[in-house]
Image (cartoon, rainbow, N blue to C red; front, side, top):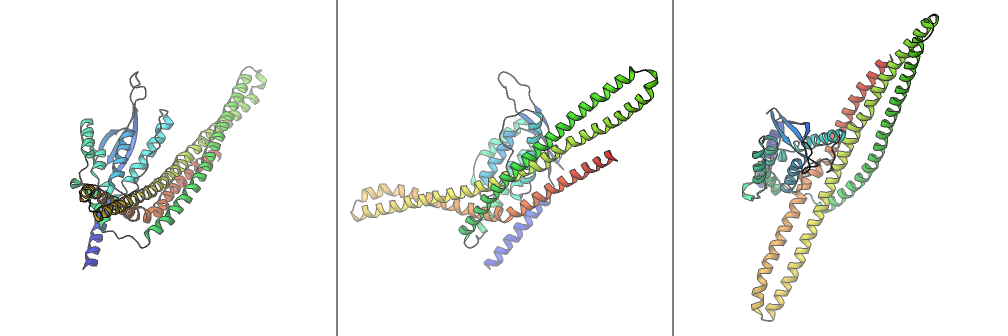
Length: 391
């Protein structure tokens, strides 16, 4: 009967997850607007337009709003790796803002792939509260922690963790996974270094080609001037030369324009995606480290309780019941701390196995396939334009 009940629970849970994910929600981040600088506000925030389809809602959010959402969700969903945000940096250049905007798009798209995070009331508030007053009031309400008032995502998550059974030798498996993640992080760090060099070389080549094209145009203008001031009998051949030079100049200019797109493709569709995947690996590494710290807290709490229990026994044996009574309050605190840290460690471990460890490799494969698909399409179009230019 217990097995049947368990199967019924997980069947219903999977049905709920599929239903949540089947409801299409497309979010795009665009139209960055920065307020004017002033003496009192020398670094005004950039406000991004967050558009949601098919609801059609449009809200303005700053980076710190995205950060608020991520931190709140990470607190609510123990064991889930909430997608990372772009790095916390101060910048105002167009390139910086565009790069951050692409990173925020990745964050929202990954977040909405998780049915629990997608169903959370904070996510809905973030996407739907259009008026600033509603947004600020909503944030305050979401910040009030009350276990009896969990939203749908939280309730489903706690039910899943409560019913989930850890695999045998979970600690040994976590240790193996930690080693794999550490190794992957090191390899990706080296890969990113090589990718940065690749992008830098592509920009250098593009810049050199632009410089060559500019110098070539100087040659064309020089010949045009020479022909205009030449004797009449040499105009025919001179004009022919100018036409050839102008035609070649047009080709070089087009070549320079097209070549200028290549480093942008590498930067946006290769380097930035690899950076994001590396950030995901680092976040999983942080979760594994946090689990280890929580287990240490539990072990420390247990040691304190055992020590206090021995102290109580010694006092009882010596008949000092007045001190035993005083010690009992501390012992009760110790018991509660042991239970809290145990539950926290257990739920963290369950959450990691249920949500992250099993799907981590699959998500990496999906992310890299998406990256290669976008990169392939971009370079295919780029190659066709190059071929048309030289035809």
